[in-house]
Length: 313
Ligand code: UDP
Ligand code: MG
Image (cartoon, helix red, strand yellow):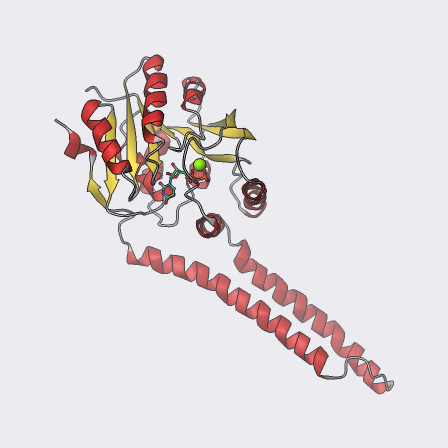
């Protein structure tokens, strides 16, 4: 098969009910585009039979190139592996639960042909999400926008098309805690958004429970901002400032015989408040140090059990 012009990357973690439909809609869309293409299914340690479905598809269609992980490494790392194995001049990252309709890909390609190197899909509408997900997602994108130096566009997920030039740059960024939608903005290049309607999941449940969501959010923040570290400094200055003002006040109150600010309760509240602030600051430091430690170990980002070469006939 000739070298493809387009690569589609779909990370898969227990999506057995969605893969065939995803494959059908991606191949229909990509065949209509009329250029050589490939789809890279990255199996992120699935245990529900997704792996066999991917193997089967690869057997029947050389467009399908499977990357099968030795275990679950997480969504962002799975997409990264897809980037590493991709060969196209333009690469599309898409969720495999069909929340990102493959039919939007030609719109992204149209913008790419106009010369844009990063074409991200903006969620103009979202269907079938809980109010909790919608609220936390909205909050997340706004907080990230406020406290990071890169202006990550609001309400965009990983669904995007990136040019080979950008892929090559991203492939050199081997940080372990990855926030791809931030990284692909950080690199620069000509970027543009295309609005789309985010659908409900085709089948199955979200693979981002609250625990993974908070981890993802803290990865995003720590990868692109020192703000949490500075927060400790700000609060420190603030409470030091308040105490300096409070000292003369208390002295004067004492000298004039007032009983205000006496007693254990006041002391206890002050001690507990500062103790709390200190522990939180330590925790924030720990988050950064833990990530430093992770980087220092320099382990590979992921481990591949079966790669596309294993499927070539
Ligand atoms: N995913 C993955 N590894 C994980 C979690 C998720 O590869 O550890 C994939 C999942 O199969 C899906 C995509 O990442 O294709 C997005 O996950 P999901 O749809 O569950 O997230 P949500 O849309 O609910 O935020
Ligand atoms: Mg989803």
